[in-house]
Structures are given as C-alpha cells and as structure tokens.
Length: 626
Image 1: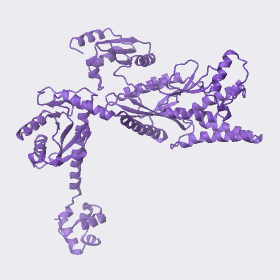
Image 2 (image 1 turned 180 degrees about the vertical axis):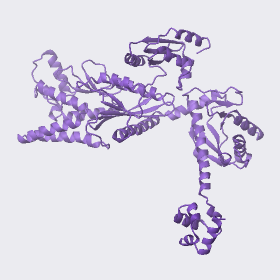
Image 3 (image 1 turned 180 degrees about the horizontal axis):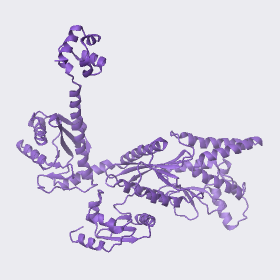
Image 4 (image 1 turned 135 degrees about the vertical axis):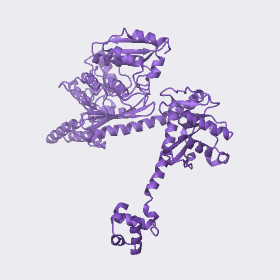
C-alpha cells in the first residue's frame, strides 16, 4: 500500500457500517487477496489498516491491499456461510487452502436409478446421487466399495449387466430378464439383471449399504448375527454361512484398529502439525467406536497464520465437502467462533432427533489420545508430502536465491556458517558454529568453542570476536576439517556483532559477506545496509532458512553450555580431599545421599562405609568441618 493509498482507504473505512458481514481486501489489479468475516466490519477492518492485528501475514497483506469490498449480513451465522462461499469462489492468496489443489475421491450411490449402484468417482455434483467421502487415499475408497459389496451385495455402475438393465428399463419398464452378470455369479450382486430379486429386496440392500458406509459397523454385526441365528433355526445353512462370512468381514475392519474406544463414540479427531509455511492435517473419523476413515491433507499455511485462522479455515473447507457429519469434533484447542461453526455443522447434520454437533478440546482420556494420534499422523503426512514433492529441496533453492537478492551477494550462498554465544554472567561461556550446505545442516562440520577470555562479565561482542578470530585464523582456514570457505557468515545479534565480524575479517584479510540477525524483529543487517535493516517478508523461504540456521546455532551453543555446567555441578567438594577418588566418592554419596548429610555424620558413621578406613574417615570429617 503506497503512502497515497493508505489515507484513502482509511477515509473510505469511515463509511463502512458497524454491522456483521464479510470483507474482501484486493490488490491494485482487483484480485481478491483475503476474505474475512466480522461482527463489526468497521472495527475489524480498522485493525488491519492500523496494524493492530498481530498475525504475521498482516503487514504483507496491508502492503499489497489497494482497495476493499464488503457485504453486510443480518447475523454472524450468515457471515460464516458467505465467507466460506467467497473463499471457494476466489481462492484468495492469504486464506487457508489445500496445498494440493485437486479433486478427492468419493464413493457414489446412484439413487436416481431404479436399481442404485455404487461407483468410484472424483466428481461431486451429479444430482440424485448420494456421496460418501471425501477420501484422500484412492485405494482405500476402492477397497471400501468391495468390502461393502461383500457385506451387502449390490450392483456396480460399471457392471455390464447393470448397464444393460438400465438401458432396457429406460425403453420398457417391464423389460424381460437378461442373462445374469458375473457379479451375481460370484455373490457380489443380487442379480436384478436376471430378475433374481425384486425392487423391494434390492432397496433393502441399498439401505444397508448406506448404513454400512456411514459407519454403522457394530449395529450391522448384531443384525447379521440375528439373521444368521434365524437361518440356522430354519436349517438354511447356506444363508447362515453367508452371514457368517459377512460378519467376519466387518469384524476384520473393527478389530484392525489399535485404539480402544467407547462403542457409542461418534466423532472426528483432527490433528495439525505445522511448519513455517505448510501444515499437515489428519482427520480420524470414528463411528460407533470404530475408526472407519483416516484422511490426510496438506495446507498452504503454517506458522505464518495464527491458530484460529488455520483451524477454522480447514474445518470450513473440509466439512463443506464431507458427507458424514459427526456428533463431536475433537481438537487440541478450540477456535474462537467454534459455537458458530458448530451451528453450521448442526444444520448440515440435519438430525431427525435434533442432535447437535459439539466441538471438544479433551485434556485426558481416550478422546485426548485420539487427538494426539491424529497429530502424530499429521506429522507423518507432512513428511510424506515433503519427500514426495521435494518440498524442502525446492524451498531451499528459493531461499538461497532470495538471500542472494536481498543481501546483494555475488552468488547464491550455498555454504552458510552461523555463530552464536551462550553464557551466564560470563561463566561457562561458549561459542557455536553450525554449517548449512545447500539449505541443509552439515552436522559433521559443526564446531564449538570454549571461550578463553576471563573478563568475569558477559560481553557477547568480545566473545564473538574471539570465536571468529579462532575460526578464521590462517591455520584454521587451511585445515580441511573445517571445510570450504563459506559463501555467507551469519552472526546472531544486531549491528554491534556485525561490526565486530567485519572488523575481524578485515584484520585477517578475508573478504566474506557477513549478515547479522537481530533476535527481536528478525531483521538482517549487512555492511551496506546502514542503520536501516533488511526485512525479509514474513513467510518467505529466505527468512525461514535464516531463522532455522540461527535457531540451530543457538541450540548447539546452549547444549554445550549446559554440558559444561553439568560437569561443574557433578564435581564435588569430596574431589578436593586427598585419598578420596572417584570410587570412594561414589561410595560416600551412595551411603549418605548428599554432601550435606555426609557433613552431619560422625567419624564412626563415615568409617562404617565399606571401603573407607577410619583414618580416612577422620580426614574427611575434619575437611568437611574446617
């Protein structure tokens, strides 16, 4: 947003009503950048222009915005529906969306036909068709169709016999029988093509298939068991055997899950795993205590979007196309307007019994375990996507190109060395050096430095000077174990650390680009930037890489610092007593538990410890009481 545009938008904002509604931010070309809803349009939009909204995307969004539109609604519920529809229509850059912009598989039941049939499809718009899904695993959708037909025989729309039957019925409703199809011969169909069943008999199986695909597995088993008992009583052992096989098929699905759940639980557990600009999502659908479906999705937003926006955006997008609405939606944390979303889902559920959809954030028990399971699988889903799409490699290449441009480097920085200092009031001070090669950590090249200066106070700048002087000394630069000359040096800190690094490299006669990363604002400083920092866009690959490198250097420094402190804590005053070595120190501490209790013990009590002679016990007692 240019300085001329900002006042204009602020002036226009005065005419926006304080009513519920939906707003659309647009760029100079009229492209919709973001769609949002608000209870008070003017107040909410003002938070954007005044940068009072703390979401990371806001500064970048406001910088691109050149105009806005808004639509007033009667209430917040209408705003929610309108927001969802507009997001679907425009697919704005800053709204949450699926990373893979593709159609997902469904199982369809052609309810508009005299003899409805099942089919696998990626379309969800045909009228008079009942859909089940979506599925993110095409193989699972196809397998479920086969399982459903083994449990309750029904036609496939792709079956030649079914196609011939539909053509004959279209020409003559009283068409004569045809030869039976293959599916009827192998027990996967009722044979309407051959006149082997009536429409009423077929309709009963259609209803059963619908219930099965909706997840009524345990109820189904009870009914089949009753039918099997009746068949046995009538000495119809063939029918009893068929029902037995169907029961075993369903039980194989129910027993396959590793999570023990309440038999009446009907819920979707949704887990999220986020990285900087990407998120994995797992939806675990439980019906009648059975885990019937596991779907995974990848979102195009991550830590660059706040929790509420991410969770709400996914829920609205997913349940718009989902055909099975649960009684409960389980999440690690609830979005602010979860009650409003619950009302929307309740309308979609349209329960005959007036059931409502509730959002729950469980803190213990099986529901909490289910959410954790979903989160773990969301992590795995994200990792699979990154490997499959080579996401990390492409993003690393983009990051290095962005750093080359932003820092005016002579070439893309393939090898980056980053330094950090860790100390507590000048004690146990250490420095760390981590190396990233082509955007990935090269851990074999990591180095750590024990600070030699003993100033007695924390002077990060002086310590950074010492570390850089040791790392880039001529003998180290010639040492193959330290690897190749870096393309870029990053120091953790602001302008003071940058000046130290530049001065030290100049003293050593080295010309290597240096950048300093300030912790608070994530701003970069380099030699030519002056007092104005270089600001990489939030969510950009370049900023993510720099922060990743800085965080790794910090982690490596802190781990060494803690290691030195731990060693210091482990060293005991007992080590200073002549005649008390490692073994005797362990004997004494095992016997008394601490130096404090040992100090309270008498000479006789000390000498009672196996391996401690009386003369040494007297010496220990005297030393501790000196």
